[in-house]
Length: 140
Image (tube, rainbow, N blue to C red; front, side, top):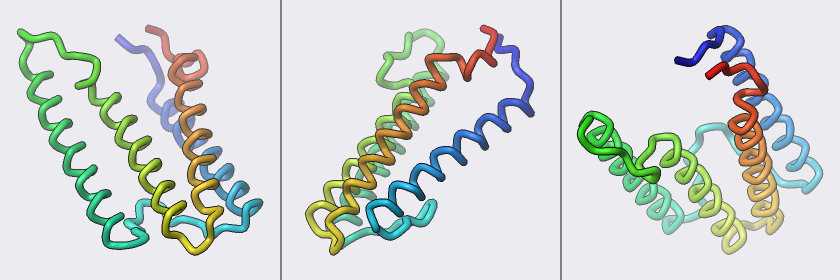
């Protein structure tokens, strides 16, 4: 059983999102690239749109199959069907796809550098948060 105050968890998550957003703003300012909108489906071309939506569909199928595996108590869930693993892989592959498409098709060729820098920073922050049990806030 995890013993943590809900308010502290929400505050920590807001702070993490704020730190990641500030890093993204600074790196894009330094590189002179346009700021990305949150939760937007900004696709560079039709190919990018099709690949992105295919990736989203595959992720949804994995999440649905993960749900049915969790619901079945008789089978141990493999690590690659854990919901958190599926979401992390989706985010990484989605950002790598965006970076590749920016490298290949964007007008400003530094867009992909900013995307990769943001992704690496976000992975680092998430890894740090998980390995330190939310900076010592989780008592497992």
